[in-house]
Each structure stands twice: as C-alpha cells, then as structure tokens.
Length: 168
Figure 1 (cartoon, rainbow, N blue to C red):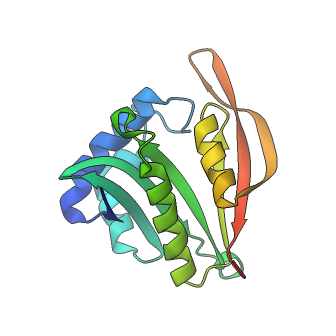
Figure 2 (cartoon, rainbow, N blue to C red):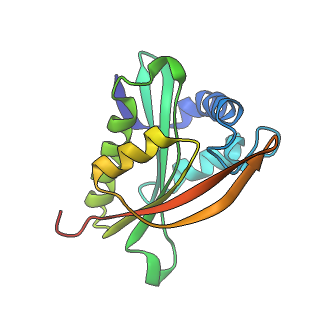
C-alpha cells in the first residue's frame, strides 16, 4: 500500500472514489452524489495547486485508489495555526487493513511539518469506527451537533474533535 498526496494523474480516480463514498456512506458526508463540489475535476485540480496548505492523501493498492483523506489549512491569519481534516473514506474491500490509520498518520505528519498547532474534524455518528480511530490517535471530542445530517429518513449527529499538535 502506498500513501501519497494525489496529483494531476489521479483526478479521475479521486472523482470515482468520492462518488463511491457519497453513495455507500450517505450519512458520513454532508454532500450528496448529485450535488458535490468535491467531485468536480476542476475543483480537485485547484486543491492540488494549493499544496502544501491543501492536500488530499491517497492510499493506492498498486494503481488503484482505495482511500483518501483531505487536509485544508485555514486561510484567515488568526486561524492559520490549524487545519481541517475532511472526506476520509476507504473502500469497503480495503477496510481493516490499516489504510485509514496510514492516511491519518500521513495527514498528521504533514500538519506537523507545516508547523501547525491543531487539527480539527467532524465525524458522523454513522461512522463509529472512524471515531474510534480518531480517539486512538489522540483527537478529543469538544462538542456534538445532534441531527446534523439527514438522508432517506435517517438522522446522524456530528461530533467535533480536535488534536493538539504542539508539544506532541
């Protein structure tokens, strides 16, 4: 398994994985397959151009993209000490193989290399395994929004979490 930042040659694979994630885990993401800016190839290319402050890490099994996690550094001067993690997804055939752990580790190392003090994320109640991974990595819950997402008559809460990088 290779984990690396995605590049121009990976855009089509990112679009396909993103659409899969929104279809197979509808309550894990605010976006939906029919309306998702994150699936727009031009938006993905723009994100690639913003590196190192914006990066999507991909997990590749050979040439196949099987997981992804995005990091976006805050742009406002007073918030530039932190970055948001979002859009974590691993295709079902590659779960429980350490892919998500590898992606999260790559994002944390990248944030530390940028000199960031804090990582933040939100995790859906529909993804308890993801929350356990974040907690095992040291993320701490600081709040929960009940009924944050709704799809097909179901509801999910979102837990907001943070990881302090300074002094780790």
